[in-house]
Every structure is written in C-alpha cells, then in structure tokens.
Length: 283
Ligand SMILES: [Zn+2]
Image (cartoon, rainbow, N blue to C red):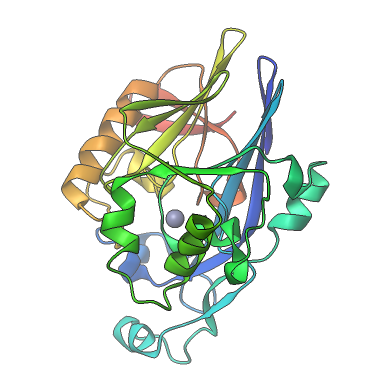
C-alpha cells in the first residue's frame, strides 16, 4: 500500500486535492444496495480528486490538476432527482493540492508540464484558479478533441472553461492529438477516448519497470469485472467500455503498477488474475 511509487529512476506520487460527493445515479449499472458500504451518511459516494506528480531527471510533470480552491454547491435539481433530502452542501470540494505538493517537496514553479488526462472540472482546477495560472513555468498539455467537445460549448461561467481560457490567454496551452505523445523522458501519453473524446492515459517506463495512470478510463474499482457499470459523465459509454476493457485486458496479470484519479486512497494497484476473475491488489 503506497501513494508513492518508484519506476526505475522516476518517482510518482499520488496527491489528493479534495473530495466529490456523487449520488448513486452517477454510476449507471452499479447496484448500491449490494454495496451499502460505498455510500456515506449523506447518501452519496465519496471519491478523491487525484493528481499524480512524476519526477525524473530534469522534469516535473503533474498529471491532472484537481478541482481547485472551490466548493461547488450541490445542485438542487440533482438532489431532487437523486432523492437526497437534505441535499449535501457541495458536490465537490477542492483546495488541498498546494499543501500536497509542498508535502512532496515541490513548489508550483518546479512543475515543467501539467498534463491533463481530460478537461472535466475536477481535473483542471489548479491550472488557473480564479483565472490566474498557478504553475508559471509549465506547459499545459491536453487532448485537443476535448476543447471542442467540452470547453467551447460550455457556458462562459463554467469552471473548466474559465480555467482553460485563462491558460490559453497566458500562452500555456499545448493541445495534442497523436495516438502517442512523448511528455518527458520515460513518460508518454496514450489516446484512450470514450470517457471524453480527448482522454489520454499516461505510461511511465524506466529501468525495466512500468506504470500507468489511467485518468478516468477506469472510474470505479467494481468496473474491473463488471462491464455493466458506466459513469454518468462518460461522453460515449460504449466507447468508454471498449477502451476500458482493452486497457484492463492489457494490464491484467502483469507486474505493472496502476494509478486512478478517483480510487479510494489513491493507492497504486496491480491487476491479478484468479479463477473467479480479475482482482485489484495494492502495488
Ligand atoms: Zn474525474
């Protein structure tokens, strides 16, 4: 069990910006009555807003940038639709990332690249909180299709749009659209569309060791053996399932550590294979 991982000469550290409170309807196909332990007292499923710091010779890459220093109010219509009375106060609370970076021995100025697995609000918050870039020396790299799909059509006051437009104004954005993109020596991004059209996962390989950061390609641990569970914000649930199954099949049974942005405790995992199916094991 670890939130810090060594991949050859590269160090990967999981950081948590905050927590989201998601009603069961966010997980179509997941039978919460069979898993009552997944729900907190407020009737929602609590998930972290993870980021991963990747440090190697000459580079510091931050994969995903949390929700940012905000508490997003729980929408009244969502509470009504989910039958939550009283409604939780917020659907997402962020703000811990700077302290997490400091605890890892890093300051924002050290970050050379912010790589965004996709452009949902709980992954871009610290790019430019309040419209001011937080990582002054970093390129902000993301999958180009997500701009047209998620940012351009969003209302002007959408949190992700505010942040991304501020980064654009600062000249920091580096959209990518190749199947595989080199981010830093030993760190590459791989196009894995479905959750969003521009979603990328990250591969880290050094010294004969290998790790993957899957972003939101796998959103819930129970998706490991249950192809019927999707996620409400999957842009294309069928494509997301196909991508997820390809990734899980490729990594199952291998000595490869895996990090997911929304898994409990942000612990690195490996996928074991047993007669009963695949199993998560702490890496
Ligand atoms: Zn997410």
